[in-house]
Amino acid sequence: MSDEARTAEQLAQDYTAMGHSVDLINGIIDGSQMADEEAEDRQSAVDRNVEHLEIMVAKSDWGSEDMAAANSAITAGKAYTAS
Image (tube, rainbow, N blue to C red):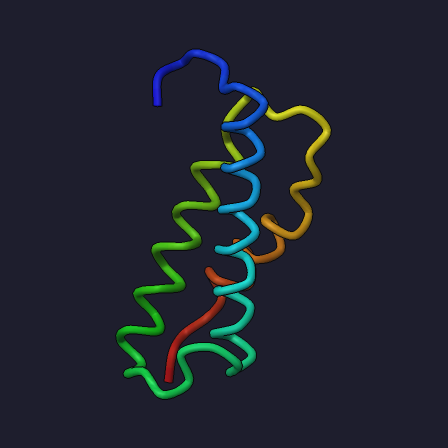
């Protein structure tokens, strides 16, 4: 995405996608998602979604969106090691 500000619709879509990443990271960590997958696949999914959240949180055109859940998932995801 360019440096242009996102539209309200794009912001909403991006924020929703961030919520999906948060849910997936937390679900993998608590065992409610991807439990039957190989450890390598779970780790890869966590790593990809942490990276996505880091990129999105760093964007400067957010309004009053709460990033607490995203930041928490980033921290938890970075600490996660699939076994």
